[in-house]
Image (cartoon, rainbow, N blue to C red; front, side, top):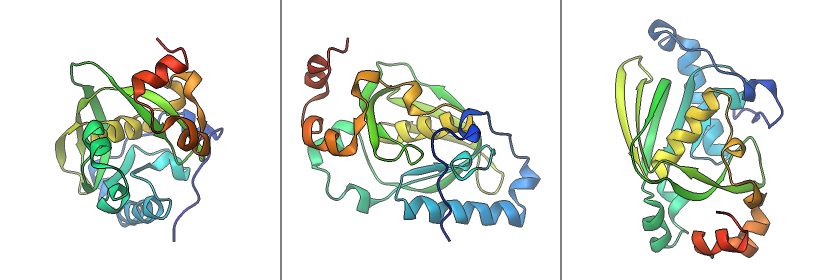
Length: 196
């Protein structure tokens, strides 16, 4: 059964989560938690969910960007965001490295701040060293939208939210974003809102 999402203001969202040992990852409790998080993320629906978002201060997140989430997005927009399908996977105790390059800016939302979005600069490409759902070390290289998802979820595990990184003048409801800003190129939007 999907769990309630922890909303902005809860202390767990502003604290660093604790790492998990390899043996702990393999316990039935953590394996059940992973399935519960997958179910909760899909029910939301979302493309990522960190354990603090269901009130658990653990260095654990699940990620999945399904084809059905992308079917109504114009191909040009998918290409601009470098957005592709990402299979379900788990990251535990991640260490994020930003690859060199000019940051990219797109609107971003969060299940813990429902109904709002803002323009957030992020690295275009990242590397993540972490453990998988079986406690095995893995290196993930993400680019485009997938890199954005990885950065967003790793931020959660350190007590950071997208509102800490956003261009503050762009924070708006999803309805206002759809009505006024969604169709504008990012540079035009930044000019209209007087963002350098």
